[in-house]
Amino acid sequence: MMQGRLVQGAAALLASSLLVACAAMLPKLEPPQLTVTRVTIGGGSLQQQQLHLTLHVVNPNARAIAVHGIDCNLELDGQTFASGATDEAFTVPASGETDFGLNVSANLANAFSALLGGLGHNTVDYRIYGVVHLSGGLVRNIPFDQKGRVRL
Image (cartoon, rainbow, N blue to C red; front, side, top):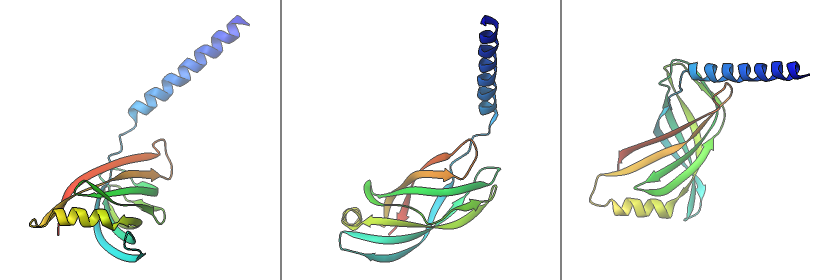
């Protein structure tokens, strides 16, 4: 009985050691680089507007990324502007790029505040961040957080 427990314990230790070793050997997935290429205005009210963003994504990884979905937030000049999610799944080729759609709800009051604060300037700071949800594999989510400046 004692020998059986010892064998089970050794097997469990060996299995967990193998899992840790395999995880250490997996290449780290770099977050994709996203750029907004088009904005289409949908319905909404004075406070909140529905927008459809077309984003261009670049995959810096040496393997394809099968994306199940993306949750995304967008800030303008430090103010929350929009948040939303992708319409459908897509695949970004290894070291490649593609375009995809993202539906967002925008808070126009915050956008006006950020844009009015930028009067006299030709640009406004932005931040786009969120999580890429993968369709399979050991790594299921890739967070991303990018900042930049956009011309008004």
